[in-house]
Amino acid sequence: MDIYSGNIKIFDLIDGAREARGLTVIIDVFRAFTLECWLSSFGAAEIRPVGAIEEALSWRERDASAVLIGERGGAKIEGFDFGNSPSTVAPEAVKGRRVIHTTSSGTQGIVNASGASEILTGALVNAKAIAKYITERAPEQVSLVAMGNAGVKPTPEDSLCAEYIKSLLLGSPMEDIEQKADELRLSEGAKFFDPAKQHIFPQGDFAMCVKPDIFDFVLRVEKDEAGYVSKRINV
Image 1 (cartoon, one colour):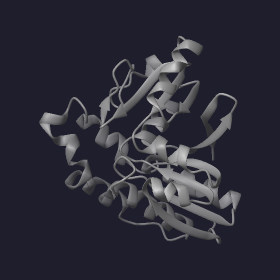
Image 2 (tube, helix red, strand yellow):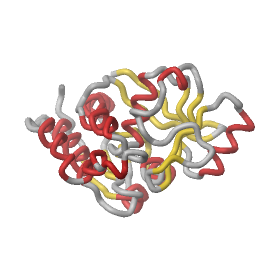
Image 3 (cartoon, helix red, strand yellow):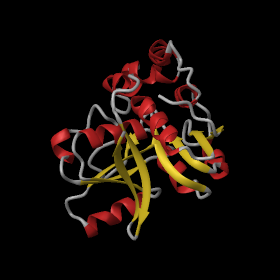
Image 4 (tube, one colour):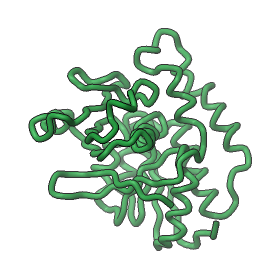
């Protein structure tokens, strides 16, 4: 892969999303944008990230077949079909259907990144594809936004993902990325191994979130008359 020669800045949290300029990657490893990659691989016809619960619920009036997925405080929102959990979403339930997705961190980054010229969602599972896409597009400015916990507290998995994407862009990829990703089980990822939290953070989610570079596509966030939509682009 070629080396990116433009300017790279790493930002944090919702405030960072507001500061972001140029091609902006909104990163949420645990779990929003990892989940959106899995939803695309499951064959979802369309993925629409929204900020507000009310906006998500309003889609039921426009499309009775829409699948509502989301969380607040990590837990599934009442009345939604699934929580923000890749291991508990049934692939057959989303295949060929529109998914409406709201979270307390990742999707909030999208709606706050008003200064971005282009937005990609970011996760470890497609980090290499993101770096390749950026290098091919060659924008002058790249902003990598680690969204953290609820957009207000930094987390190691999102910071790691930002640093990994930066290393790929600079042509010096982290050689120990798989080890560092697995070691997240000792910090923010510990919740996926807590027996008391399995109803919110099932253990199966951890492995689906931390394996780097298993998808060769990016999700570019576009806006149409109905709101935001995550468009899959193979790279």
